[in-house]
Length: 307
Image 1 (cartoon, rainbow, N blue to C red):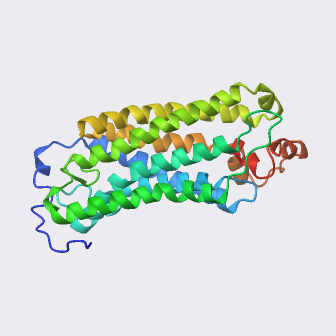
Image 2: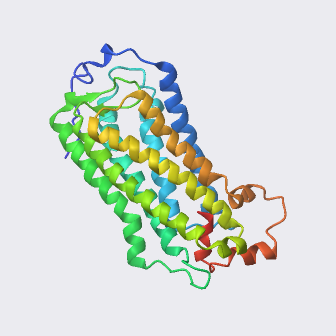
Image 3: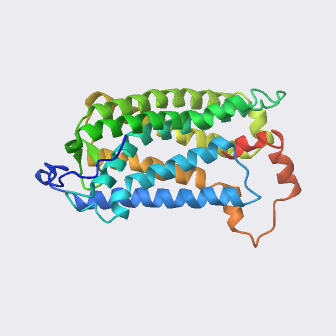
């Protein structure tokens, strides 16, 4: 598989000039993706380099996949070609593969995070948290990128054979005129999103049925709120994905709806107390009581309350 190097530029997106461009919506789309992408980079680097912040491996994977998604949707902006009806073909070729492969990937990393959270959370006060096995951890970490590779290669092979299918009609990102790729990608997203909602419901029920855990660990209250917020995101994502999978059509307003999801993920997971305290380095460290409280679930399993 190789990237075609010589493609007549007048063939790339030959119908892109037919639609009027809503530049306000285009700017909003890029703003949301750039804020989310750079914000999650800061969150990710803070968690990596701060000794105060501990997270599960799937959390890092989750953040990294959303960073990749936000920046992939912004490739034309970075190259200053988003206003061109015929952007660089090689850039357009790569971006098209990314934008169909990444929505299923981010959905899968989200599901993997929730699954590990559920597996690590005790069903009752007396039960010790289950430690995730190496095999399960590898599956949760690598599985999403297996789907990414399959879809990216599939789109790239198709586009190599039909380069004139590439479009930049909305001036946001390149995509294929063949709606089958949207249907395939969002059929996967819809399936995974439904599974995520089920996992989130199970986790919320487990928290609700064990109020003693919530009384003993104040972080669990925040966890419950974050789970409920992200459950709402999962429902929205599932509905939007089902619409895309059925119609195969995706326009700019719906793109903006999707770009709000990583922004909300930034707000949900980037405003946690330990992340903020990592930046407030001039303040006093956690008290011994807080440290004991965070160890209720064990030295490593206590990370579940900080997802």
